[in-house]
Amino acid sequence: MRLKALYRLYKESILRNFNRGIQFIVDVVYDRINNNIADSIGFILNILSIVFSQIIKIRYFLYDKRLLKNSPLGCLVIVVGNITVGGTGKTPVVEKLAKTLQQNGRKVGIISRGYKSKNESLSKKILRFVTNGAVTPPKIVSDGKNVLLGSKLAGDEPYMLANNLPGVVVVCDKNRVKAGYFAIKDFGCDTLVLDDGFQYLKLKGSLNICLVDSTNPFGNEHLLPRGILREPLHRLSKADYILITKTKNIQQCEELHQTIRNHNSLAKIIYCKHTPRFLVDIKSEEEKNLDFIKEKKVAVFSGIAYPESFEGTIKEQGAEIIYTKRFLDHHRFSAGEIKTVFMEAFASGAEMILTTEKDAVRLPKIFPKIPLYYLRLEIDLLSNEEDFNSLAQRICLPQKDKLYNH
Image (cartoon, rainbow, N blue to C red):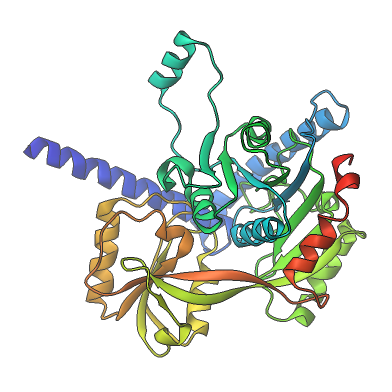
């Protein structure tokens, strides 16, 4: 038993040091660190970015010349994504869009890759192949009636969407063409929302919505892994609609607006913000008004791409952050890590602990000595004097025949 305990501690130590190294590289990518070591790592990452850019060009070429082909699904497919890595607030937009389409009479399915979800074991794959050779079916997170998978198997974002969208089908698979066929054939979906699908060229979309974070639009404008760009800026031209998220002041976005227009002169540009609505007690699910944290000493932790945005929102509500812990994006929390966070938060004198809704679905069932809440965010539009309902009707519903044949 003692040897097992020592081995467990050794593994945890190795994993902790590995995560620290990855976090350091992430900080270099986001230009949060400026020293000689960061410069050296940045130089290496820049070389890899050049290699990555050539791979992207080859991929575009193969699809442009139809050497690689995309597949239409015969129904309305709305692609929602971005050209950067994480942090644009995509999940609330997908949720709002799906809910609005559903309210307008559409049978909606959300198709997701299920990033960081647990895959079927190798033994099960072999057994499936030996017994009947059937293709592995996609993961049905929600059949529109019940949530069938937890966050570990589904991934945090699909699970969160399934929980918040009763009546909407949520299907996950790396092969999103296959997932789309399942949603249409097995559940009768007539409208698919392709979550994080801007780079998924295998599936022919009807309409493309690209999100751009106003607080950190394109990072240092380098491609991965030196920067946060998944694609060059000129790929903004692929978008039919561009949503500028986390906007506080439209007038302060003039330079960003012009940058977008330099690459896309036709897309409709819409400004929106992620509005904090309320806090939810993770244990009791009781909702609290935002005034509840005003002038309170709080601890915050998160495992998201751009934690500065979440922490800034908490400060804007009048809370004083006295303890902060950041994990990597989509980090799967261990019981030991969360216990440490809770103990450190309590020792700091915090009156409560706050996290994001996306992180809340990944928490092990451990509760601290002080209250634990997640922050609920929703989307509001700031421009064009229209609500999300009229936007969804205008871009999706009246154009359906045109979009099916796009």
